[in-house]
Length: 95
Image (cartoon, rainbow, N blue to C red):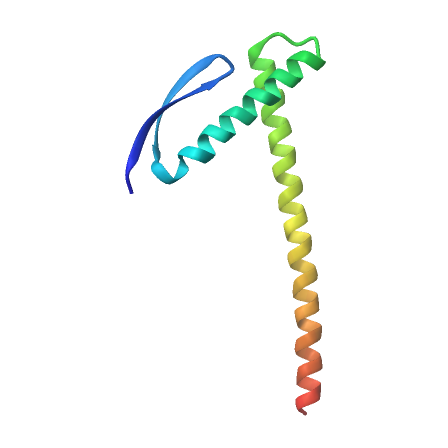
């Protein structure tokens, strides 16, 4: 896989990175999302320290991720229960 040298701007700092070509778009979108969240926090709250804004952004993104993981896990559990019921029904029908 080919690697690309890119520069991402996060909170007014440039970060040179070497990424797989297939990851470039998601990396750029992610850095834009981080910058948007930081801008929103700086406008809503009286926080001007970039370190605090970055910490708040990291927490916000982590909470979003945890919620999605929980939702996927709950959906997976429901699906497994339904598949077990179908399997039981099919087993009973074949007896």
